[in-house]
Length: 75
Image (cartoon, rainbow, N blue to C red; front, side, top):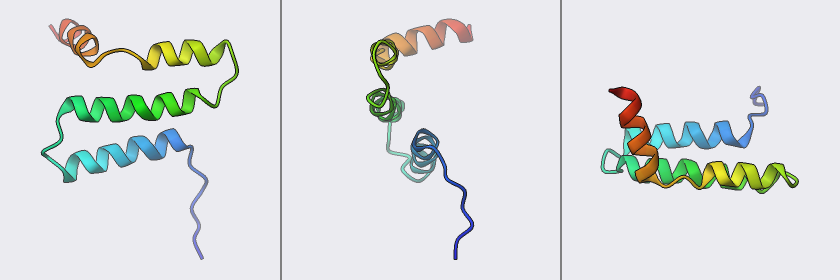
């Protein structure tokens, strides 16, 4: 008998990525980012228009653009 509460799939995907990133040090930041973005795109597909389009637009940020913005914010 388990007493686990239902957990939204985005949280499960995020936790899985965190665990895998700890266990698989060979994964690059790009691979982790792209895995998270793929999960986000999957969640976007569950939405109705026009929310789906906005969600997909935010999930389609290239890693290079994300990294450039992140590096600019860190400085």
